[in-house]
Length: 66
Image (cartoon, rainbow, N blue to C red):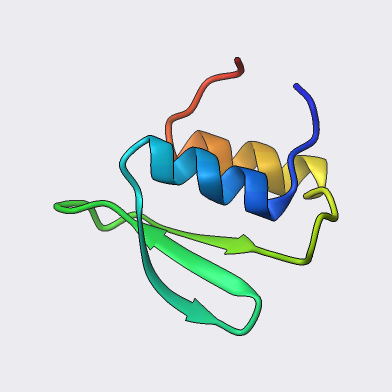
């Protein structure tokens, strides 16, 4: 899977029904109605997310490789 930036991942989450709950510094916190799962996506310009973090966030969001 190609490396995504925090902005790209945030856009992907919003397309999949996740909503931005709050922003804490450079971290955007996303959630879904009726779910306790919260995702903290670091937005640091256009820098790519590290591989392990990206895989973890995609797994928690139940997004498969595309």
